[in-house]
Image 1 (cartoon, rainbow, N blue to C red):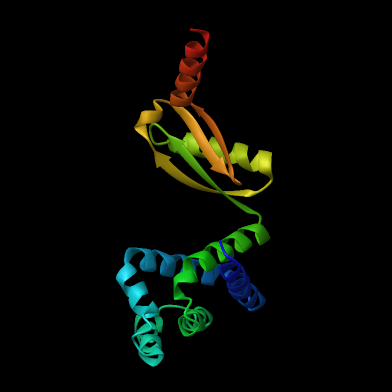
Image 2 (tube, one colour; image 1 turned 180 degrees about the vertical axis):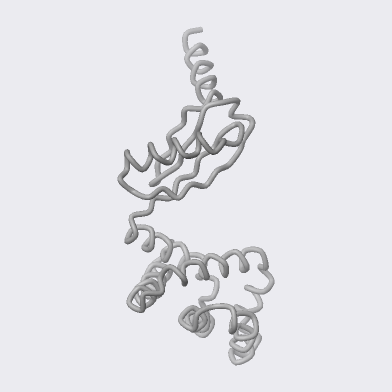
Length: 178
């Protein structure tokens, strides 16, 4: 993430927080982020300097005018006017990180060989909440090649207790002894 994304993402968060709309705007920031990732041609169009700024701003009004909070729409327009619309993803990441920090939320990605059932999911969330003291926001992924076990990614750390990793470790250990 660059300095621009940090400064602008923080500014959007602070403004929405002061107005007690940070939760609603976070939902909208996520939705816009998904749209822009799914429609890169649209993001490229809004960034195109060959198109007059007034037309690009009009396109933003058409796409998001009745869909998002005025604060977020104005933020998108500022990025467009400054020629930095391509920085939205970084700004969105900063916004979400600040929201999570201020609301004591820890995003955790858990990867398993098969999908967790409801009981396993609840036990995992309860254990992580007890250990961290934070509300856990769980994202689940299934990767059958893990064979079993679990891999957790949280707070920039990876905890890997998968069978695949244990087998790789054993294989490396045995090859060193040969």
